[in-house]
Length: 441
Image (tube, rainbow, N blue to C red; front, side, top):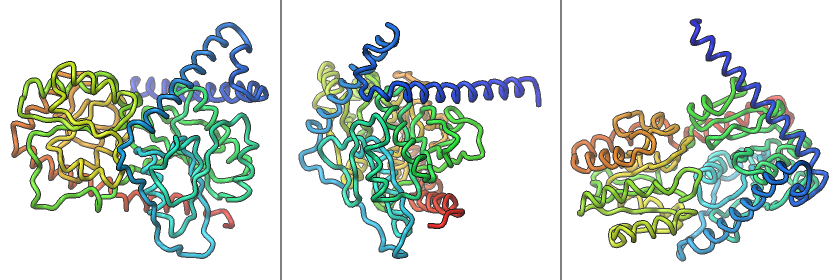
């Protein structure tokens, strides 16, 4: 081992130790403050700096919750239909039980991952979901969902655990303190309840965030090598399972050509992946290329801003905003695209990208997160935040139909090999069985 490798190893060990210490301090702080039952009490507790930070977090939390509710109710397509989760008939009368923990169960990549796991393993495992809030409407139906909007301890969860008696608690995590104290606190008590019940605990690390660290967690599952390398820690309990996509749904006939001159993206228009500048590559391309149109599929924090920005530059008649689209209606929107654009500032995986790949749609974006790992083609990735560079790549591909077709075929082959839902479901099925191998269930 050379000196650089030794230094990197030392720094990795130091970083891991620091992350574990931070987690320990967060847990101790919550144990101390949780006795006060209310987050509001934190505002007047402790030093002035603690109170100031707590006040900022609390008001940001209220703003985020209000924004989510407005988005859910006002940006939803009026023809939106929830997706019905279906599973094969049970293979056995008594199946091991899996409880999925996820803060929201509206349309999104992590939510679809849960749905795909349920549909792919439901014949051998019984599933239920616990969530923070469904915002007044459901994106998915067909599986029991229980809401716990506010938690200050584990007591409200005991009845659910007594009724369902899960063998495995599968936590889909995006709740560290960077994401906000109320989110972290909700997850904290979800983890504690699972530990108290003696369940096997799996944590899916779906977002580019440091996971919840605890020696009682049996497996950390990362959605990409990038996520594990940059946000995880060295452990024999680590595993990478790529999210799988339903390529029977996200497909197109072999003889169907890509449409011409339509670029687009499919995302929740929120701050976790996008920012205000994410609309700029579309604007720049359309200003330089009068024959091109853009399709923006999704809703969220930036929905109104993006529409206003497009109107400011006189492109409202060439950019279509669909609002929230149901899962089963997404393939029809993808079929309208000549090119999929990923103008993200964070990306741990991004299931919307394999959807496009299997439909033979070329993908361009910023060289951010796991996109390079997914696409395996550096030439189509611009430096992070380089609006002009991304616009140049988009225009270059639109000018080269032969390369578009070749990229589309290559994308489809790679997606089928690495990102099929059947492959993913088999991996989670095996993981569940491994975790229960020493249990009498």
